[in-house]
Image 1: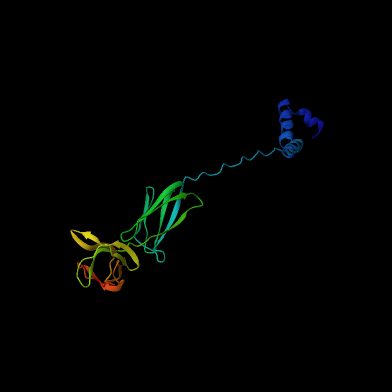
Image 2: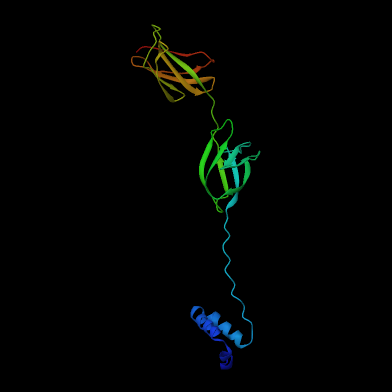
Amino acid sequence: MALEAWNDLTLAEKRKIRRGFIRNPHKAYERLRSQAEGDTPEPDTPTPEPEVVSAVDIAISVTDGTDPVGQVEVAIGEITGTTGSAGGCTLSNVPVGSATITATKEGYENYSETITVDETHTSFTISLEAVTPTQTITIQVEDNDSASLINGASVTIDGEYKGTTTTVNGYDGFLNVTVPIKDSYVVNVTATGYLEYNETKHYENGNNIVVYLLST
């Protein structure tokens, strides 16, 4: 800047230029040069504030571990939806933050999980477990020779230990067990003083499964 141009500046303008050299020498120099050449300096461009996201859309996919599951009621907080035949749905305007996602359908275990909703978490996959229908059957254990009922016999059904026979409704040698609904079961029974029993037994609804043990 020529000395004449500097002398034409007001005291406030001179102070502003000096402060500019201290804070940002390059920008202050450009402003000083443009004023010397008679140009109008460009105003400083403010830095835009980052946009605050308060809600996002969430894509949901529901399977049974292999195939998609339709007609599942899905909810995140108060936002709800239902999956289509392809097992998917979108929940719109879900508030960001921590939330609980739930999924329910008859024939499946209820699903619930705490999730984080934000711009980086906008899709979730849910795997539902099918409910296995069950029934209660009664195991009756008798001595093969005397027909006496035996308490304390250990009972295993399809490889799962179920307990020991005891007195039920005043009668010895009984055990009520809950098992998946089937036509037959592999029954294993052991008792002190008797040979181990292991056979596949057919079950007819309402009838006891009777096991006869042979003494050793």
